[in-house]
Every structure is written in structure tokens, then in C-alpha cells.
Image 1 (spheres, rainbow, N blue to C red):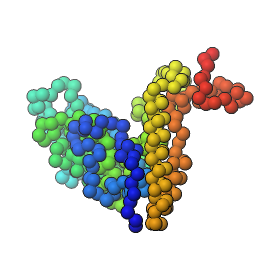
Image 2 (cartoon, one colour):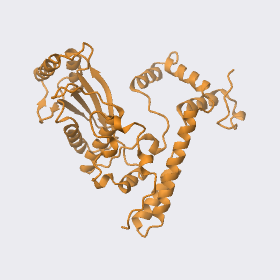
Image 3 (cartoon, rainbow, N blue to C red):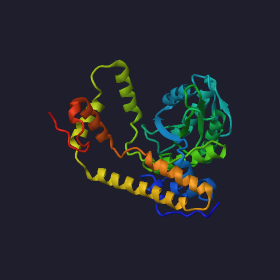
Image 4 (spheres, rainbow, N blue to C red):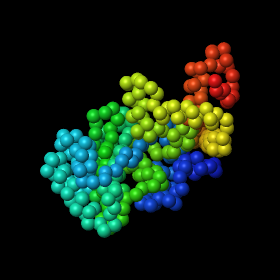
Length: 340
């Protein structure tokens, strides 16, 4: 294979929209295992161009007291049907074992002189991959991720679920560490966790990547779990539109004109897409067949990237389709939508 010719812009294209120095618990995302061959720019470009599955690492909540923690562990363990696995490989499954674990955790938490009444006892994390992922390898990668991330600092248990189309893990970590430090992750920590989990999957032969949405041409943020549940109930039960939808439409109409952050988002997407095109051009000049194939894949990747559209613009477009006669829909999508 010919020497990799890297065009300037790779770091900007894959850098998450966070301040990397603010990672409290782990090294900044940009420092993750630079010596790993699978983290080299060419390897990542190949995975990005082929759109390999993206990992999901999500904080879903916190428990605040012993009763809350006990109920949560019963939920992720399916009331004793699934075992909870700890840092040393121990399996906790019966009600008595769960109660003993809760008692042990709470004894240390309540002995902390800095504890406040509303302080979190544990952090709830979900690790997930798309349907079709090998469950055995996913399970083992999750075990490795938890050990690498929390094994030396915080006690944890996790449960592996395969009752849905996509395999996922519920990981519960005690916020009070062995050395007294509290677990209070920031976005930079979450980004590092995504990269660590993706690397653990690749170590086990599962293709996985952890890129920010904007590297894939996605501008709109994913809706939060509470909002998703509200909209799901509305779609099932009907009734008046959810307040979040009413507010979203109102805000979209108010922001129909270009705003500075929208312009900045468009400029960022233009820069990212130009980088991919320039890198594809560099690969196309290589003597290596693999490089030329990657050039084609990158060109296809850019051509099939979604249009740059914010959530507000998406809402305005849907409202226009519902309220505008078909004959008037040929107007520019950027034209302001009039209120009636």
C-alpha cells in the first residue's frame, strides 16, 4: 500500500463539538490510544466512508437513594431473571444478593461527610449497537469497556439485554469512587467513552465507529428520551399535540430567517465536505488499488450526505407542506413562511 497522504482538515472533520480539555474523568477524546492502528486517520476514514455502525453510549439517569437504586437494579435485572455482573466477574441475581449490594453501596455513600441529601447514588448508562450485532462479542466488549473505564475507580454492575432487536447493556456505576472522588461526567468524558467502547468492539472483530453527527453530515440533534416518549404516547393515543411540538413549531416560525448559528453550521458542513472531497482526490492519485477504492467510497459518502437542515427548518418544511397549496410548493425552501 502506498504511503498515506493526509490532507489538512481530518482533525476538524472528526472533532466532536465539545471542549476536549474539560474531560474530568478521562483523557480528552483526541488522546485516545493514538498508537492503535485502528485509530489512524486512514483507518477511520475507511470506516466513515463505509458507514460502519455507530456505537451509542448514553447516560439515562441517576438514582438518589437506596430504594431508588434497588428498584433500578431490579428493573435492569428483570426482577431476577437476568444476572448483574460486577467488576470482578461476580454474578448478582437473587433479591437477597441485590439487597446486599445496595446495602454495601449505601453504607459507603452515607458515610461520606460531603454527601448532600439529593446527591446521586449511581449513574445509569446504556451501551447499544444496531440490530444484527453479534451478542456474544457485544457482551464481552461491554465487559471490557466497563473494566477499562471504571474498574480501578468506581464499583459497578451491568446487565446484558437481548430482548429487543438491538443488543444493549444497562450499566450502573456508583458515583462515589474508591478514593472518594465523585463521578460527574461531562460531554468530553462521554465522547471518550464512545471511542473506548468502539475500540473494544473492534478488538473483538465487530466493526464500530464513534464519530460526531456533523462528521456524517447530520446537523439536527437527536431528541431526548423524555421528548421521544411524549411523542410516542401522542402517536399511539392521539389527543391535543404535545406542548413540546407546539413550542417547536412556534420557535421554528420565529426563527425561519437565517440566524448566526445556522450560518456557522452551514459553513462548518461546507468545510467538512470539502475536506472529504480533497482527501478523496488525494487517494485517487495513489498507485494503490485500495486507496483508489477508498477515494470512490469517500466520493459516494459525500454525495449521499443528507442536506444541511436544522430542526427548525425541518419543521417549517413540514408545516409548509401541510398548509401550502400544491401549486405554491415550488417556491424556494429558504423563503420565509408567512403566518396567517
